[in-house]
Length: 260
Image 1 (tube, rainbow, N blue to C red):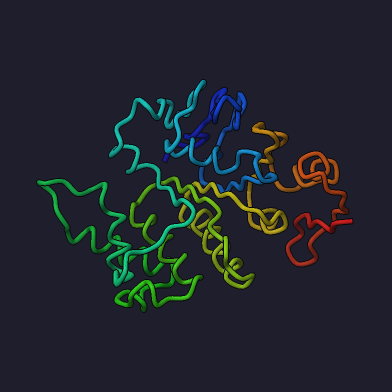
Image 2: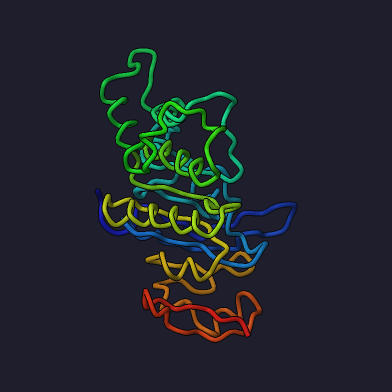
């Protein structure tokens, strides 16, 4: 895998109804690291993730992957490098865990190359990595919310890409399942070298798990870098209009916000 920064946003503006949601934004996504995007509602977090995944086309500027603009690459080529998990996904009725995860292999299927032993092995490996192998033949609809999120993660792992983009993957999960899912995502980066970008609302969880944080305000990067350099009283006040104190997490040593 190429070291450095494979995925970049360069002078990127995305406009809705003549209003800039992203405004001349520049982002370099670190390879083989877990990057979290934070910011208040309306700051452009999900818009940035959708632009990075080519679900949105910038009005100006460009998103590049391996030095080539996304709009000049073929869909199949991108899908073999980059996987995206949007918000609000729902599984078809009666589909099993194995069937849903197997859909991650779609970018590799052609009329001349159908399901193979390698495809099956990759799906099985994705189920093992996410702890869902024992549930492979259960209907997805019968699983808990935390388990269902693991199935979706397994599906994009089966896509076998180096880059994973996750839009609010912990939404609607209780705290225990949020911790479990973020621990899994962190492991994908640390152990398997995945480049992960996720949108999160919980700043303390972002500080605990992220290698890199991008703080957005009004469609621009207010600050980015390691959690210790981004999570400060000044940044939280400027970005979220929130007064706080910052302490060191006694367990993990990461910055922890105490609202005032």
